[in-house]
Length: 180
Image (cartoon, rainbow, N blue to C red; front, side, top):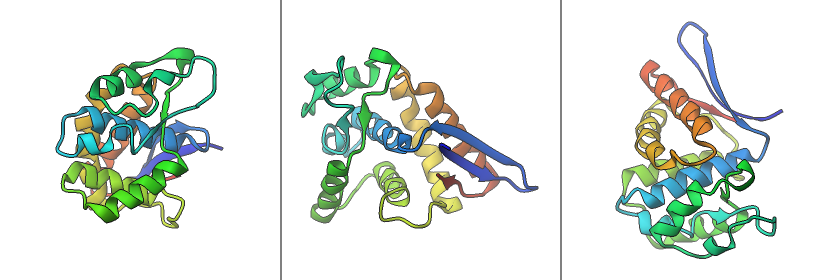
């Protein structure tokens, strides 16, 4: 078993990207949010160090220098940190509560962050339907293409490039993607 992003194209052709084992979607989402945090977009400061965590905490080589640090330099350094070949960013349950609280206090104004929030909701613990609409898939394809260069030094870059490719191909075909 594992976690995949997939789409069925017209004619029945299935395309997919294997993200990793179950739970890897939390890493993927954390990396997209961290990339948003360093991208210099309108709500980047709101996301950095609050909507994702350094993970796994307590493991030798964990970048403790990055915990609770919301500077853009630390976020960039964290994305490039490759100890053990791991990604050191993830969305935790604590982040879920922070995101929910933040959305109630101040609505998202940047469309790219709004798309990432919809991805978080669709793949969240309270979601039953893990299929994205063609319109959201197309918007996310643009958002992921914008953020991917900020992940170039991440150990997950190849996986995230494949994920972005599935979104782009599905968007081009006018179909939605399935998460899970």
